[in-house]
Length: 367
Image (cartoon, rainbow, N blue to C red; front, top):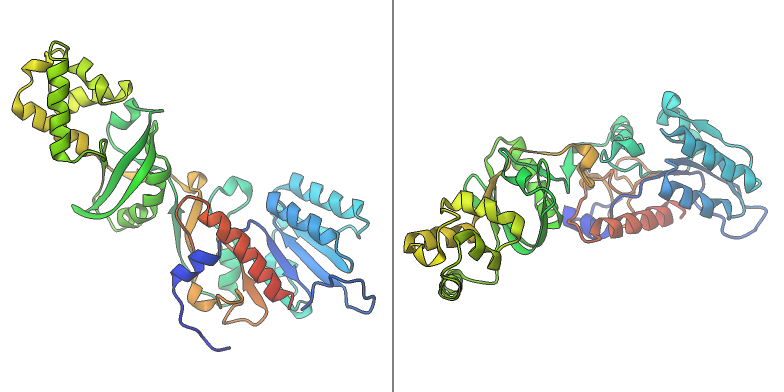
């Protein structure tokens, strides 16, 4: 098969994770009732929500047999097996955690196609524990080192912790790695008991995880007033001081900040909260403006796979044909989803990739 030039970005646009794996034993899916068509033997690896949805569709197709089911969760296995029996199919063999053997499940000599779509390593409590990577490696594929992505960040000290539960909207967040600005996002973020989270933080997290793994210094800078440039912000402060000059500094801040953020601002700007607004000096106003435009957090770490929405890394996309999702190394082997080295920002892109990759791999495997 000719190798077309393509980039990892092309995969991100069209593929992502389904959380099931399917072995197809025929080049066609037998969507008609021709009795002369050889039965299609489908082994389903993973019987979570997507797996049972796929299984329900397969059971409605004439000529499809389900010889085996495999999952880490025995309750899900029992439910899936019951579905098969109630559909009038022969009771399938089941492979639970203690018997989990992809090698045993997939008898390569009797299969025309195999789809590996077992997900990544995120949320391991759901059964997504990286088995697909090991299976891909066992047949010669390269696996790019995996790491958590779309994952919350950890910060030292007590500042973020004191703001736990506070959500900021319409803020701009800049990512600095070794003092150089690398990226910026606008939107919503959240303070937690361990650090930072929320959509724009998660979208920056992949770069941050990689930087931390390289022992680089990572800083998140929050612009609390992105709609105002420095000049407009200074004029806004002067106007507020003129109108509320007899108020205390901490009271004046109510015009600018969420209530929970005011004590943090008072502390970090080092301006007495009881000081009258009209007594705030020029240097103190400059200090406040700078803080409002550059509220900084050092990033000390990130949360684990159990809290990561997706997994970065996986089966090298150079070894997979993006037009069919077929392996370039093993004929009849297909990949779908997060098991591949594909990941995207928040906003539904990973879901779209999940739907696209499952459809493309399934259509290609079925001939």
